[in-house]
Image (cartoon, rainbow, N blue to C red; front, side, top):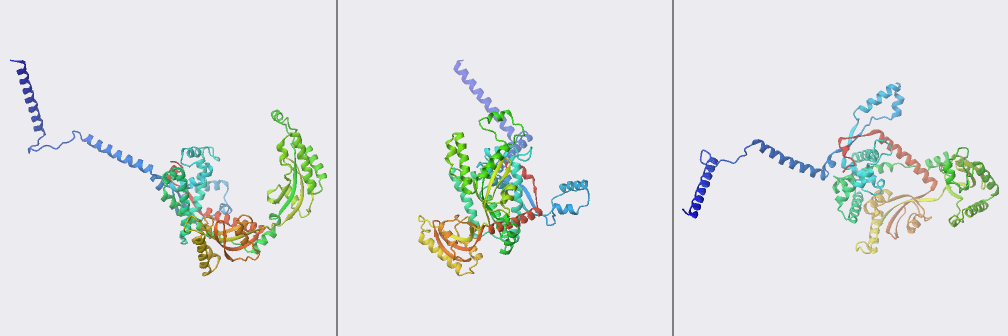
Length: 562
């Protein structure tokens, strides 16, 4: 038998064997009915584990996407705000209590454990709380976004008040107060049926447009920029809802504050009760510095200051008294101080010291008693003072020579006005000088055809004015000081013939102003009016704080964190 024949027979035999094995495998796969059996895993456990692994992957991916998109911050509650109409001030509770200190402490502990009282008026999500944080931290974090790595590092710095807290905790306390007030104002606004108008929406649009502009300049999307400032969960819609809510709250607060008005009799009576609280003085003074040598001065300090002669208080007093004896009027006061400064400059051999030798640093004008030391204030504001009176007053750093010039009731004028601004932009075909003037005239005609009141003008200002600084306030500017506005505007308001209620179109570099003149007032009058208004505002806010309470919810653990 040849080798080739034997090899061929072996290959045939192997093929038959493989074919037979295949038939046997197929036979095993057939069911009794002759059809192919369904393929199944040998292990039921393996099938279950496989399904669970797939589900875990799907759920994990979903959670990751939700966290990335900020759904947790967007829906988790950070605060609940309640209004308690029956709340009483702490001092009232103390007056009504006849128990001892131990019982007071026990009651205090029970109150802390008790559930918060009152009607729920608002809930704040973590995203909303983070918007408050982003806004309040812009200056504190020196422009760094609160949710950037730099911002997070700064927020994690040690607290200024608590050894165990952080800067994030400090800001949280401030935010809680803002949330309380804003939630109360928003609740009241809804109760009174207040609505946002077109002017309010323009303010909100302007705020978002500014953020879009900053984002564009930084070459990032608005969403990315909002995330850096306000954290995950804050997109344009969330921010807009927040701004609308707070704009409506601000509208109610302004409505309340506008009710704080005071007549001329009330303000004059306030002045007469304590004139020197509002009067001002002009005076000259010069300090002869002295150091208390009754206490030991360290050798290191002496070594460092060896180039300068230490003047004790007795020597300073003597120098001040000698100076006082030499001065007889304002001119001699200035000249004697100039001599002293010239001598100091020669001793120091410094060109810088003589550079401003002609500058009059001795004169103080429009000084108020409230900002002086008690001794200086009592002397200057005494009814016995006459021009050129002089004295020497001891201070912590030496002895001051003082010369009285005059005391007076501040009568510089300021003015109140409202305006509707229609800007001019020659590059915009819809805002040419001709078209802007025509629009201003149409608005004035609309005013003239109506009730012609300050309230009616305010409504038109909110509807038409392009001045974002006053549009939400009915176009009003109160207490405008002379020189604060452009000349044409000021000349109109300060015209001696001007009367409250006058309305006219005035053109300035900003465009066409429809000005509603409300009146002028003297500085002392405005000071008292502002003082009364601030006192009433504080009383109002104190009452809001008394009747509202805020509690932290579980979501607060995500506050201020990416």
